[in-house]
Image (cartoon, rainbow, N blue to C red; front, side):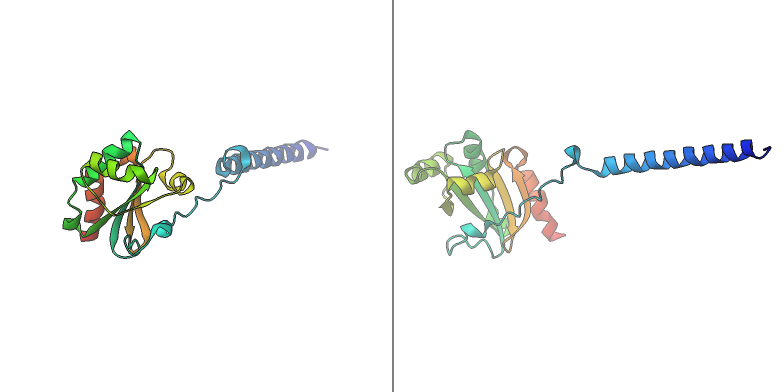
Length: 168
């Protein structure tokens, strides 16, 4: 019976080691699991091709697509800003996807001081592409989204930086 205390301590050490390993595994699994234990929905692939037409050839070359509401002050300011950008110098086509009544198109372009190729979006399309922080700006290369910005994160410097990546 002199061996029993030695065996007991080895068994106790083994049990403690197993508990430490299980605790570590539990923390690792918890860390890797999304909050609430739910697997997040995959981000939907945004496909702007539904707006393509002969007037808006979104699948060819480099294009800037601006999704905006004609009655939104942030959208109007972004449209004015984009109207000052020399897109041709960058080989860039600029298109608007507008949301609002057709009767507002001419007043909208008069307000921003420029006229660009456009199409009208349904409420569902606008909601899909404008997101939580309209307007939404997408840079496309041969129809695929290369970069996107919500209106609050967009400016001409950011656009210029993204376009300069092609030159590198």
